[in-house]
Amino acid sequence: MEEIVNKVASSALEVFDLEDYYQPGARTQVDISQWLYEGFLLKEKDFREALKNEDWSKYQDHYVYLRCSTDAILPAWAMILVTVHLAPFAKKIVKGTKDDLETALYQEVLSTIDYAPYKDKPVIIKGCSKKPVPETAYIMALQKLQPFARSIMYGEACSAVPLFKSKK
Image (tube, rainbow, N blue to C red):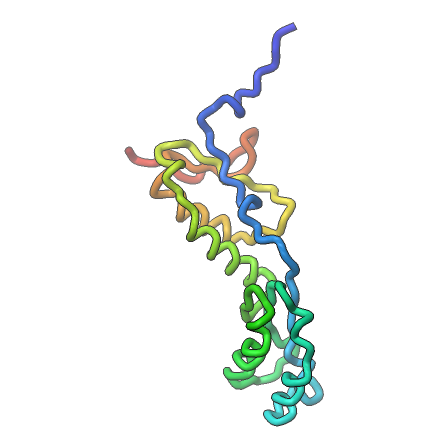
């Protein structure tokens, strides 16, 4: 019987797996409508008092995304004031959705990577992740890899979609 050879493992193909850069930790939503009168009206004195009385330590080492689940019209300083209270405890705070938070985390980590090892190599940006990798992270990864890689594909080695080929 002929030995089965894994051609993908022995190829020059470099796999760039965004899951490797996933930041572990609790993701927590803070909905500021809870401190608004009937969920819609910001009364400054009551709002400040509610924030002062909140136990912010429960967000220790969390990644937090701030939002308002109602259609309340808020002054710009409202989210900033909540951030003042959260900042001593949370690892990261963003205004928006969980996807916005994940995007911000990937943006930070992708800007710290040395892409030189991918110079003149075929690269595959691995798809099918088990962790929540936002689509925007794939776009950012492509932009970071493109100046270095000879070619870039997306997906799995068995069914990769070509995205870019250097004109060198």
